[in-house]
Every structure is written in C-alpha cells, then in structure tokens.
Amino acid sequence: MANLPTPPMPLPQTSPVKILTRDWHLPECWTLENYLKGGGYQALPKALKMAPQAIVDEVVKGNLRGRGGAGFPTGMKWNFVRKETSFPKYLVVNADEGEPGTFKDRAILEWAPHMFVEGLIIGCFAIDCHVTYVYCRGEFRDGPVARLQTAIDEAYAKGWLGKNILGSGFDLEMHVVRGAGAYICGEETALLESLEGKKGYPRLKPPFPANAGGGLFKQPTAVNNVETLANMPAIIEKGGDWFSSVGCPKNGGTRLFAVSGHSKKTGVFEAPMGTTFTALLNDYCGGMRDGSTLKAIIPGGSSSAIMTAEEAEWMSDFDTLKTKKTMAGSGAVVFLDQSVNMAHALANVTRFYATESCGQCTPCREGTAWLSRLLDKLCRGEGEKKDVDNIHQIARQMEQKTICALADGAAMPVKSYIEKFRGDFDALVKG
Amino acid sequence: MIPLTRPAGPVPSPFNADQQARFDAGFAKAIAKYPADKKRAALLAVLHLAQEQLGWLPEAAMAYVGFLLDVPAVRVREVATFYTMYRLKPVGCHHLEICNSVSCWSKGSEALLKHAKEKLGVHAGEVTPDGKFSFGEVACLAGCGYAPSMVVNNYAYAEDMTPEKFDALIEKLKNEPGQNIADFPKNHDTGRAHG
Image (tube, rainbow over all chains, first blue to last red; front, side, top):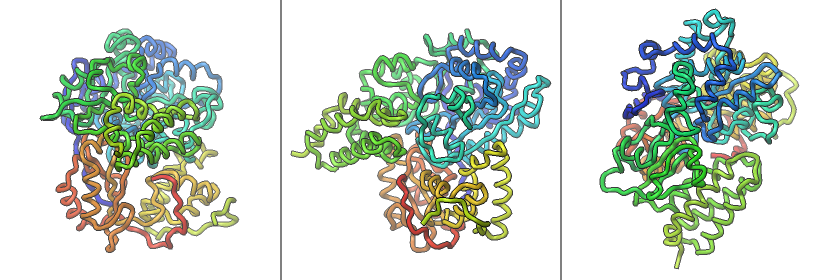
C-alpha cells in the first residue's frame, strides 16, 4: 500500500488552563519520555492506593461529563456499573470518532496517548474491570492507533499494565480493536454489537450497557469517550474540587474544541467548559478568515441544531446549550461564513445521515432518505414552497420514534436550519 | 446463493504462501484479544486482515473467514456489506477516498471531487483502465480541521488538499506499486446498502 506520511497536525494555541494539552508544545509530545517529564504516571500509583469508590467519588465531585456527545455524568455511570454484582465487568472506550466536524479524540491519541492510557487504567481500577477494549475507527490504523499501541506496549514493559500493577494486586489487559467505517458504531450499543463481531445495529434499551444483560458479552459495561478518560490523571492528582472549579457549574474541567470551517485558524483548542463561541472564535481562532463574516455556527457536531451569528455569545456547556434547544455534543464547532447557503449546507449534512442510517428503524431509514431527496431537489432549483414545509414536517415526525438517537440527530439540524435561515431555503424555490 | 448454515467440511484458503503466513500471524493475535468462547468477536479484525492480503474481499475470502471463526457465511457477508471499509469488488491499486462531510464541504471538497473525476477520467466507484486508480466519496474522516481531507487505501491521510496537491499526489503514486488486487471472479451481487 502507498506509504504516505500522515501530515503532522499544526499544534494549537495554548489555553489558560492546560490539562489535556499540557505537553503539546513539545516536539514529539507523544513520547513516554516527554509525558514523564510533564508529570505523567504520577496519578496511577496514587490511585492504586485509593479505594475504588473514593476514585468514583472524586469524579462525581469533579462534575466530569462524558465528552462523546451526551454529556452524561461519568461518576454516575461508573456507580451504576459498581452496583452490579455480575462479573467480569468491562470498560469499553469509544474512539470511533465519526461525527462530522469532530477530530479531537484523534488528537489525543496522536499527541497524548500516554495520558489516555493512564486515565484508562485508573478508570478500570475504579470499576473493577480487568479487560478493557479501545474501539478505534478503522482508518486510524497507521496514525492514532499506531501511537496508542506503542504507548500500551511501553506501559506493559513498565509494569503499568498486566499482572499485579505496581504491586497493588490489580490486573489489567488492554486491547485495541478497530471498526470498519460505520458512523452508527459511535452509538454505544451499536459499538458493543460491532465489538462482538456483528453489524452495528443499536440495541433496544433497557437493559442499559451498565447493567447485567446489556453490556459487552451481556456483562456490566461502562462505555466512555477517549477525552473523558484522559482527564482522569488530573482529577486524581489535583482532586475533584479543583477539576470542578475549572469550567462552569455542573460542567467540570476543560474541553477540547475541534474547530473547522471558515475561522482563520482551525484545529483542536483546549478551553474551559462553558467558553462562549465568541471567545472561542476571537481568542483562540483569530476570528473569521479574511474578508468574511460569521453567518452560522454548528456548536457540537453536525447533528446539533444550528446557531446564528447573534447567538455566538451563548456559553458552550452541556446545560446552557440544552436550554437553548441545541447541544454541546462532541465539541465539534464549525464556523460558517456568508458564502454559505444554509439549504445547501443542510443538503450535505442530511445526505450524510441518509447514508449512515443503519436501516433498522423505518422512520429513520425512510425519513433520512426522503429528506435528502427533497433537499437535493431544492438545491437543483426544482423545489416548491410546499417542499420546504414538507421537509420541516418530516423531520418533526422522525423525532423520538427510533431505537437510537441517529434520527433525532438528523432531524435537529433540519428543523433549526429552516427555522433560523428560512430565507436561504425560499431563495431556492423555483418561480 | 449464500449458504445460511455452517460449511460441512474445511473451506480452502484463498491465500498464497506469503499471504497465508501474514494472515495466520494476524489471526492468532486477533482472536487472543477475546475470551476463548467468543472468537466470533474477532470477525471485523479478521476481515480487515483478509482484505489486506487481497486488496478486496472476494466470496472465497469471506467463506474462509467464516469457516475459521465458525460463523455462517450469511453472517460474514452481513458484516462485510455493512461496513464501508470492506471492498466487495476490486478497486484500483491506489484507492482514493475524498471526504465530503460538512467541514470539508465548506472548504471545497465538491470541487476536489469534480477535479478527481476529470483528472482520473472515471466516475466515483470505477477503476481506471490501467487498474491503477479508483476514487470515492466518504464522510467523515476526522480530518475536519485540515479540510478538505482524504485517505489513500483506507489508511494514509492526505490533508489540506487542493487540486494542485491532488495532481502531485497522483504523480507520486503512479510510481508506487500500491496494493495488490487479487484476481478472483467478481462477486455476483455486491448489493451494499451503504457507501
């Protein structure tokens, strides 16, 4: 196969509080040597001397919310798994980053793989898990997965993985497995199906993955995002109260914002939870590209509801955006300028969901395809005014009717793009 | 017709000796990751492994994988058709995939796709007459900050692409062998619902 080097990602600007990006200014910041210099693997011996429940309590205190998209409190999830009496228990890492706009887990695996590995060991210890799987997206084989595998091999060699870790009596095996290109496998139950060697059809809940009968091989399972776990060393070293003090109420810590689109700088930026979109754009990304003005913001991956330029003052934490009827999602922010017709943008987004719908539930399989056909018709200049109303109506009919949230994720942009940028749609109507 | 049951006897391997050695080494590693009674879980990994040897997944490879993991052929095919990284028909020695998700789209991926079609003289999904190149549209590759982005042969990222950089990439790849594409009868019906 062609042996093209992966271009090094440009190193992002620094944030006032650096947790995840602590070492990113160093050349070859991903090496074990550099991670140790920055204070790496000091949290692990400390954690192994703590009671597992005390670790979870710190996570609860720290208000750590899942960084994959839903923002579920991590400590609460781990307490669910801890309460189960069925063994073995699993911790499965969701590194199947696939939401359009999102590339921050890739950045962690490429630039801070040891911070993630240390965090994952601590997480496994906290829920009494002895075998963990990191499910990475298939395309990551030669870049992020290679870096991660090197880090894991080094950790085994140092005695941080394997039998009787640091004399604590705790055993842990860590395996990396790869998906094969299916967006739906980022949904946690579809991911578990895929990990069991099946097509990625989401499972009906309950039972939830945390409960016996619902997880990997029907065992209690915590499914956590890469970024969530990479925060663990900092929480152990500095405590939950400190972690919570960074960020905003009920949303502890910083967030890796994956910025793309028409801002002057794009890339992965670490900023405290709740940082406003105005601050993110101006202070981290240097504003919009030359000669362009902000028109719209995708705040948390393509399935989040769109925001207008006037709404850029909103805070970016999970709770604020939920009250604003959109979502913080995966932290993928796309700044779009005046050159974009939002109906064309929506046609692109919707085509993605139509392609990636797994086909299990009728409202999603038929609805996404129907929406995509109508939007393409509109963009070809063949649409009528009633088509725009129809598109909005179909999206409303798809919500809350399916096994997983893909249909809702497809409907949310459709409704919001039309409600907030109706003019762009009407401009394409023929006649 | 895809058999719904497990095969009665051993299924012949589709690999030559070198391919077999690489496959066997990878196979042992893949199944060692799971509990002994759960080796079916390694299906995705083993299909990747088979495709790495052959460049695509002919029916013979799927049947062999199913036999090794004790999975009915229909289940293997179900997985192979569900995931977009598995190739159900031969592709070019260099298979280029251009991302057209919203971030790449906002930075000119449509123009890049059009350029690829003109440069290579084939449509998405087709192979050039010399067998060297094919291309397709995908979303999303997690390269959004470095858009438009693309991958070569599933794994090698090329980012911040422009038509000029695309041409340079083609010139470079022309002189590289790329992946071997095994010569098997084409699968009679690829029937994939995705990608």
